[in-house]
Image 1: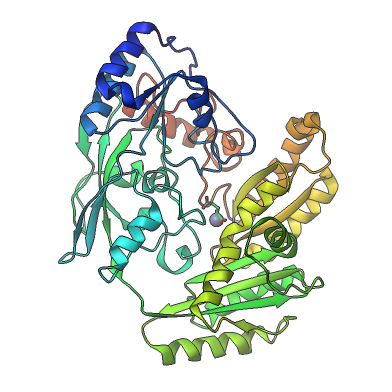
Image 2: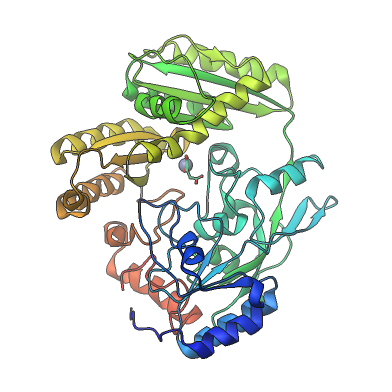
Length: 471
Ligand code: 2HG
Ligand code: ZN
């Protein structure tokens, strides 16, 4: 891939300003600095200009101009990404979708909703819940992340284990292509066997194929009941081993999260309003949620889980006995990423394997860390085999942190994922920081195919350049 783009000049800036108006056009250093990073490590890349369009037509005109002038465009949601997808690595235009934030329609007859990409995930969930409907994908950052970013990265979250990820709810997308044309990718129907599935191609493409400007989602009936339990384990490996037993018993929890002790301790220390009783001899906890409409069935399943887990070296199970306690436990879980980040500069690897391989993955990660001299804190969606491995900078020097040795260690972790039948990202995407590891999971031919698709959508490679594939 090339990385030579035109410099944004005065005429370009004047054109952009005329399209989005003065109030949505920014070149001041202090504003550029607000948009030069996301949640990925400590990385910063300055755009030349920040544009905040309010209409699809404005986006189309900006993209068309950039395409003709060879100016890169990086689209940004809320900036909560963890693989650097929203970083404008070649400068150019940073396009924020924050003003495309309307819930256009909630169609009760068909259990569908049409929304813009700048809607906050939790705002969308609450709007449909008020009408008895359920949009399950719930990334930890659901209170701040945008649906557009969730689409770009194919986000998951705790409920994915029972309900699937973002892609499983998308029916149709409005997309601005690199030449400025506006298309719809599919139809607002549950079944669609009509031609290639461009809708699904767009989901997870990290802003490299087009700019999503509307999305139509299918929705479910809102489950009425849930049970939440917190289970301590003396050995982290035992917690991982227990996971597949639950599924083997015919139970699909609506959340099955793994949390290592250090992650919980960080959360207690760094996030206000979180205190839980953590026995320092417990290496890990599982947070298990069951949901449905029939309280009796849920209680029976919870008892089955209790009996199953007794076969493992686990301590006393805490059953949350109020909504406030459930909220507290989920807040604790959702805060882990932030807590780790506040504690130390870190690299977050989004490893994923088949769930029964989770014990081998965890042990392998720790063994690799010992050999390469890094400490990791792990937590994640155990039911999906999706383990977030947070490598801490800790005492490492700046040179060591960006050095080849650490990269080799990370490569070994990903090679282990591949060996265990998994891959290198479950829900955070490849973006900027994981692209150098793509060769572990894709052959040259497979990569050529992906690049050919990119070429078909964006021949001048102006859309989020420097992401997913190596230049
Ligand atoms: C987590 O499981 C997430 O904590 C963090 O993967 C990602 O929601 C996020 O931003
Ligand atoms: Zn996660």
